[in-house]
Length: 146
Image (cartoon, rainbow, N blue to C red; front, top):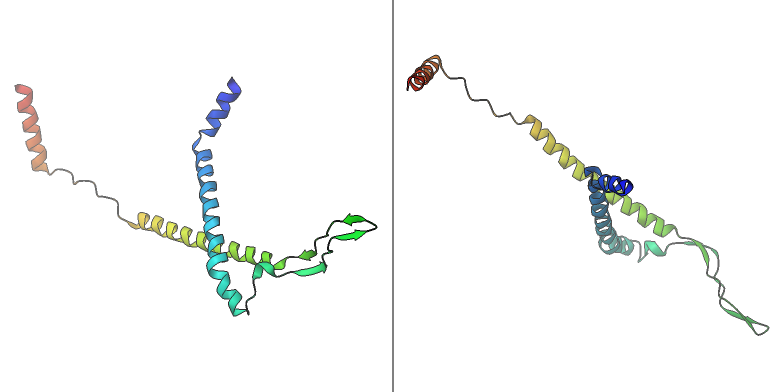
């Protein structure tokens, strides 16, 4: 019973909850960036490069072999062996865009923290004057007599 109680306490710590939230947000952010690069950024770049689709760029090391029938036996097709460098380029571009977005967010966050440090702290109310102190003492003395 103690194991599950300890495990529950571990899961309910603020750090774990914050980490889980960060992972969920990062996953959604990654999907947004992937869509941005795949659907918005890469088509114009591909068009500028004469219709090249980066994900299709590859170096074929061995051509694919179609399905064959030899001596009445069917030999399964063998897919091509290739180095898919276009997809790698696309993933690097995704990484750079995500890194840039995170950089911008952290920069804005740092500027807001700087502004908080620069803002003057509210001044404490001024101490009562000698005359006000004397009046407060008289008031307190009259209350004590009643």
